[in-house]
Length: 323
Image 1 (tube, helix red, strand yellow):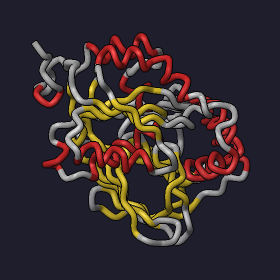
Image 2 (cartoon, helix red, strand yellow; image 1 turned 30 degrees about the vertical axis):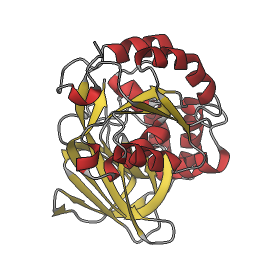
Image 3 (spheres, helix red, strand yellow; image 1 turned 180 degrees about the vertical axis):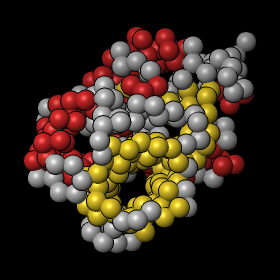
């Protein structure tokens, strides 16, 4: 008897093979190593989903287009093969499709990028054999996503969904550095180096925050972040208590600390030890607005994408995910 499809699996019930699946592969992920990792796992994936289809991304944003088209076309499983950037594009494309069109589909990830912070947070293995075992036992789970509304580089309004962290200040400077120089040291070391370089020239920025509708006085911050999951930059535990199922974002602010204080905080971030340090505030909210008279670059899931003013708002249980 043909196994039941993913579309018929109830929330929390084991998923089954035998569905129509599209794997969206970013061949440039992992500093060019993503495609090789996928080839090692492809046979395993085909044993779970015979007849799966593969689409290679050709340019930035292509994953978004492919995922939206897949949802509109009734594809039941859409898998992002790459890192957080690839997954972010796939999630954004999926959620951009009308709800009636995407009701059948579920999203998953095959970690093949440099950082893979989302996979780390939810426990999706990077090893292909372990990944296949996890997917075979996986269930359809509804996760929170978040919507960022901001300005594109040309000043036009823009919006996109994200799964991990959106941030301005030092995180925006780091994203700008990564875009200029690339991830030549891999994910974790590249983000560490760019973080140190950004601290060396750090200057707090004056921002005005509105948290869940309550306007706060303008203040100087080195970092303001809205986190749906716990890590950024290949393992920095920016918001160690973030829960992608609680309907809330973790809002982290780092005030006008000295460069020496920032450098002392840097190693602590990898274990979440910065929380509670002087000048570091962590709280929960559903909606965060950030305004500034300065041009502040925006880091969304590790990528440089636009600038302030920005609004980040949680979308509870918006994303069906195979975990």
